Image 1: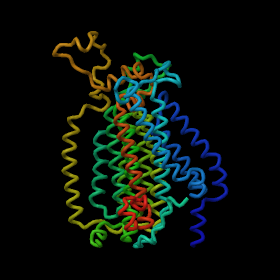
Image 2: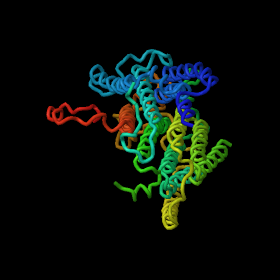
Image 3: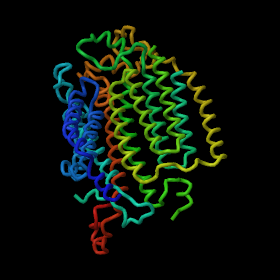
Image 4: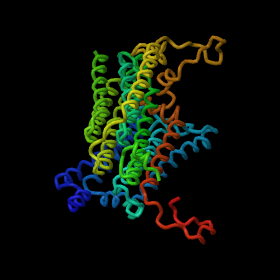
Length: 165
Length: 115
Length: 213
């Protein structure tokens, strides 16, 4: 029973792994598309970020946590999380500095309408938010799924290896 | 009628929060409340025969103005949904910590077992 | 036609909610929540909110994964009995009062499909500029401005994104802060207490020992 549990924790069967290897890449690509075209088609930073997090979570479910943390270590994920938040804030401050003293002023040139390179800082904000949402949700899922507690245990029994990698 | 169904959904969630004893069931009830509120806000912005608030090159601007649904509640609900996911995950984390401490998800037992 | 479809789907959502609340089996409850969420996403799509629908679907998937992975592996599969009878009666009375108040409030709402914020949008705009207006000048609701000038001012075809990241970016900043706080809270809750307590010398030196706090 215990052995079964460890196997289950480390990942799923070969079929699932093989399919996941292909599908997760496409899911993450789709998330990137949703983010990049967020100002033209339905989508944006939030849905795209959640989709990309879903791709990473699929990897984690199929291959186990080790594989995911090899791909995206927890320290790097938290760094990306902070980077996304900081980037969004910096874009706002850049509006304050370059855009005539208005926080969140769209200071970049707007470009042609309905093109990919247009709308000033909006695509950049989308990217920052997608980074933030992806990293946050992946971190949260890793934190929730590494935890294996025994009922009524003390803190010494509290198995949580978030930052051991 | 549509608003009434939303209200009923909200009240089902509230009833669950008030009567359930299991922490996980309380969290699920909160999810019900959240989805009812987001649905209600989107329903408020709907316009009969409307189109999505996305301008394309195919549709002239004038007809877009005449047909688009209200974009403001959609933008607000979009953020609210992602926040609710974060909040639900946080509350699940708290529930798991409580389970680890007390060995049960039952709130009445947790209340009795202080210490 | 569309309204009937939405009503049927909302009834479906309500049934899912009732099952999620009433069933004793936790796995059934979680699956009922999933049904509720996906039906909500379909309703949102019918209401012409594709952004929200996409987000809702993916969030629901992640929520199901979180719930099934982290909750149902605890070995707790079923729920004990509900609260005591007086407690349930009290809750029922409270909900009934809320229902009456809500019905009164709903009667004041505009009919479905005619949002107040978009009233008068189809009439031609007043030609005089805003500052020239006299005392009767009415400022239109912000939604009308977004629809009319969103593309022109921000060059973003998706007006929802324009509202989210240009007109009301403060909201988004606050949202990012809330999400950040939730993640930090969850990680702080789920990690081990502290790897080692700080020694008195470190405390005195103000180093603070471990970075856990």
